[in-house]
Image (cartoon, rainbow over all chains, first blue to last red; front, side):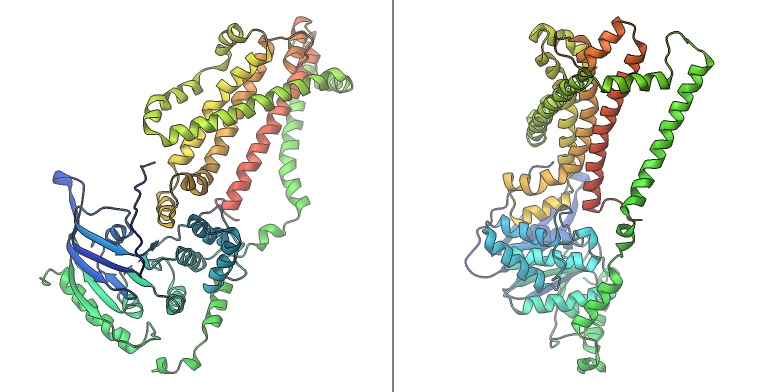
Length: 260
Length: 293
C-alpha cells in the first residue's frame, strides 16, 4: 500500500469556497513528464454550483484531486475553506457494509456518537429516497441506488464543498435524469458549494450555475458560461439545449485548435 | 413546450418507483429453491464419489493383490466401527483435535500480528517479507529435530512446528489482502477522514477479509500436516493421539486399524477444510462477489 498522504486542511469556520491560483500539475519527470494542468486559475464562491467540462485528458479529475487534497500541485496554490467531500464515477461503497452502514461509517469517522449516528443515518437514507433499502448490501442495489448511497455518504461528511467526478457518468439516461432532480433537492436545503466534473454538456447546463470549459493537454480554462436558466430545469428543455449547443460549439472550436 | 407544465409529467416518486421496479435485479429465484433441494444437489456427487472409491477398493481386494495384508473395505470399516466403540479412539481424536485447535489458533494470532505489522511498515516488509514466503516452502517435518532438541518430547514441540507451518500462510494472506485493498476505497476512506488506526479498522482489515480467509484455509492444510508428522515423531507416553494409534498399528503391522485411522484423519481434515470453504463462500455472497445465477 502506498503511504497515506494526510491532508490536514484547517477547516475554517464559515462555508465552502475554492480558489485555485495559477495551479500547474505535472506527472512524472523528464521526457515522460505529462503536464495535466497548466496555470489554471479558478474561483468557486460559496454556494455556487460550478460544472467543469472538457474532452478527456483535460485534467478534470486531477483538478478535483488537488482540491480534495489527494494530490499536491506542482506549482501554484490551492486554497479551500470548509470541509470537502468527493464523489466518484464509481460509488466506491464498502461491500461488507449495508447501505446504511456505508453512510454511518462516514459519521463514525467524524466521531459522532452512536445514538446521533443512528438518527442521522436514517435521515440521510430517507433524504436520498432509500427508505427501506438501508439494510441492503451494495450489490443488491441498482447502479442509481448505489450512487444515491454514495451521495448520502458524502452528505454525512457534512461537507461545505462537494466535489463530484462524473458521478452519473455510468448511469442510464433515465436514472441520471432522476439523480439530477435528487441533487437539486438535496442542495436546496443546504449551503453546499459544488464542483461537478462531466463530459456531458447538457448535464452541465442542466445542473450548474456556471459552466467552465477546459482545454485538453494541458488543461487550461478557455472559457466560461453563466447559466441564467431558471430552476427547476429540465435536461430536454429548449433553453438548456440552446446553451448546451453554444458550449458544444466552443468545445469543438477548442478541439480543432482554433480556439486560442 | 411541455416543460412549463410539469403537472402532466410523472412525479419524482412515480419515476423513482418505476426505475426501481425495472432496475433492481430479481433475486428471489435463487433464494426460492428449497433447502432440501440444495442439500441434495450438494450431497449426491460426494456420495457417488465415495461409492466409486469403495468399489475400486473392493475390486483391488477381490483381485487378490497382497491379499494377506491388504484389507478390503468391509473389514476396514468393521474395524473402524469397533474402534468407534472403544474410548481409546475418541480419546485420541480429542487429543489431536485439541492440539489442532490450540496450534492453529496460535498460528492465526501470530500470523495476523506479523501480517498486520509487515503490511504497514515498509522496512519490516523489506526485511522479512521474503523470509515469510521462504518459511512457507519449508517442509514442516524438517523442523522437528530442531523443535525436539529445543522443547524435548512434548506437546510444545508439536505446537511449535504447527505454528511455524501455518503462520506464514496466514500472514501472507493478510498481507495480500492489505495490498489489494482497492485504491478507490482507500481514497473514499481518506476523504471521509479515516486515518491510521480507524482507516485500518474500518477499511483495510474488512477489505482484507477474503484474502485472510484464503490464507487461513491454506494455513490449516499446513497445520494439519505438521500435526500428523509431529504426532508420529513426538510420541508422548500415556497420551493417545491419532499419530500414536497409527504408530502402534505400524509396530504391530495392523493394516486394518492403520487404514481405519487414516480414514479418520482424512475425514477430520476434509471437515475443517469444508468449514473454511463455507466461510469463504459466505463472504463472497455477502459482498456480491459471486455471480448470481
